[in-house]
Amino acid sequence: MIRDLEKYKGIIPAFYACYDDEGNISPERVQKLAKYYLEKGVKGLYVGGSSGECIYQTVAERKLVLENVMEAVGGKMTIIAHVAAPSTRDSIELAKHAESIGVDALAAIPPIYFGLPEHAIEAYWTSMMEVTNLDFIIYNIPQTTGYALSENLFKRMMAKEQVIGVKNSSMPVMDINMWKLRAGKDNIVFNGPDEQFVGGRVMGADAGIGGTYGVYPELLMEADRCVREGELEKALQIQLKINDLISELTSFKGNLYDVMKLILAKRRVSVGRARNPLPHVEDDEMDHVEVVRQHIDDAIAEFTK
Image (cartoon, rainbow, N blue to C red; front, top):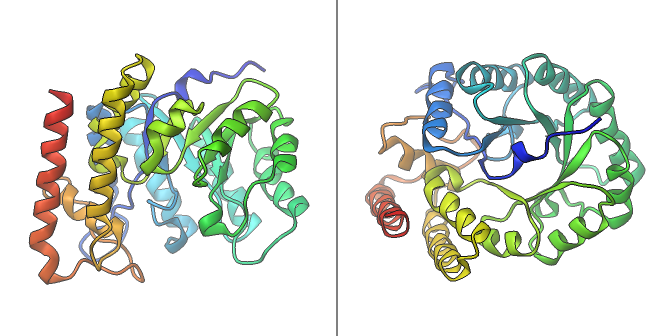
């Protein structure tokens, strides 16, 4: 089967969890946020990952989020559903559901908590592919899962027809180059760490999926354009500005996702607060949220004028 890899090449924000004021999934807010990103012109959305607070949601909640994303923007942009869950049974259920509503691809981190051997990780990923015909993306994020994708397992996974590539969130940029060289077939490598988007693209990444993209997609899209068109000096300047902004976003006592949700709210896109146990921005930090929002807007104006 010839798979369309072009639909994955571009900027794909990791979609944030959207709650109402009581902390329940809000279908209305999910749809509003999805349409917001459609209007921004991003390539697609990565739904149900870390930024989507999947670890703190039930299977039913995760289905509800994905259903409303698809209702709002399905068929208008690329949708990748992250379906990893604590049990293989739940992951299979999420994978089947994702295919039934028309997503473009599945993605999954390795199983978490127990340190499983590689043959068990391979079996876990394979179980999701066996119940769908969707493209599948390996998600390598050793800093949260405790497992660093090995070259041997990567090669075995890439030999499977449905596997189209890897979302690489390990910090060494060299890993991206290795995945491109060792794939053995046409593939997509997604840069994961937002702090090294430009470096990742230069080293061979075809696209980016990132957690902070959602508050400044304009900057990532412009950096991506610069890399494609050889304007590397400007791309570097944008990356340096993004890194400054990331430092500001992570300077709060509150969790990064709560900070970014507050910034979106200032743009009249309310998506609630981060779900506990993620800590909230404290009252005495609220003024600084506005300062960071202004810095983001200033950067967007500077680099996209």
